[in-house]
Length: 419
Image 1: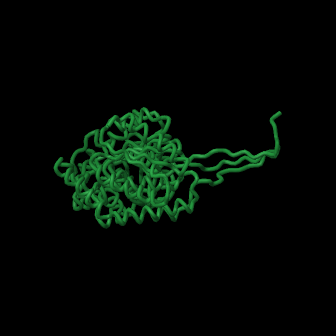
Image 2: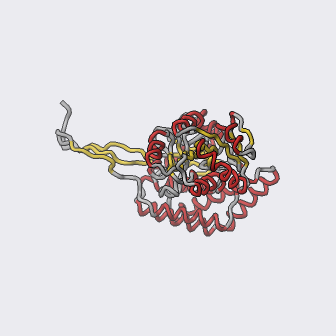
Image 3: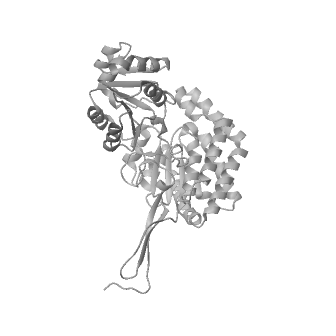
């Protein structure tokens, strides 16, 4: 295979398919999504067999269990994927919405209307569900997708992509609306990022720090994504202890490998004197290693002494770092210095402090009295998400349907000319 020719052809086919997709009505798109859900259910056995091939290879390569868990598909997960497609059907069509309109003194009618981004390239690792989530979100928002999954989930991704294309063919639609890059050669990714500026409008990376950094460094088209999820929880001295323990446990240990998992716990010094040992006990009982600063270690000697690098580490494992702070200002200062702009939460019964935290912490998602693991498009009512964006331009936070649109201006006149 000559990669350059192969990828160029994929890009050209995507541009052609984009015109076909834009002509579909909301009803057409929703019917297609329902057909995709049906196709996934019908192909369940094939998908599981393909997934077992990927898992066997991963085990032979001594892949960490946490990565294998991300990779694994079973009846329950496949049904969840199909149901997530049906959830997108229920959401309003983001295309063709009038976002702003005005009538000028000269009689011109000017409107800002939502439109698709065009062709979206998605580069991702591990999780096969991204193949479906990304595809159906793109379709609903009128976008064509070029999917390039990781080698560790190649068989699963290819099988899911075929199920989606089967639904496209069944509905007499261009199968190139969704294309899967059928090579694990990394040159294909390099070519997507640097050489397809004429055919790809946006790149979305989903994966670890290495992948995202590579995409951000190499891409010559706009990128929507985040580099790391170094998420913080600040426990104020007014926090209810039962509430704090419940939230911290969930935020760290529900799923340690996701980007919304809490990595650093900032605790008010006064509060820590009476409550730190209870918090540490709960974390230890959950199998979590606790690292902390000198002050926290003096209170509880079960805590391992943290190093400077711990404050800027995304563990993605059952490890958490703890730092004691004098007040909310010191907590916000720490988050500003070490955070990745992803998700931060404050636990407090003081509404004034909560508002201060929500207003001053400049992350994509800020929370009060809840788990950082809610940083998810589905939990936000956006349906599935194509990713979390920590950038400040275009989309920010969970990128759902509206994040996959842009807009254009329409101007309607009756013969006006500019003097």
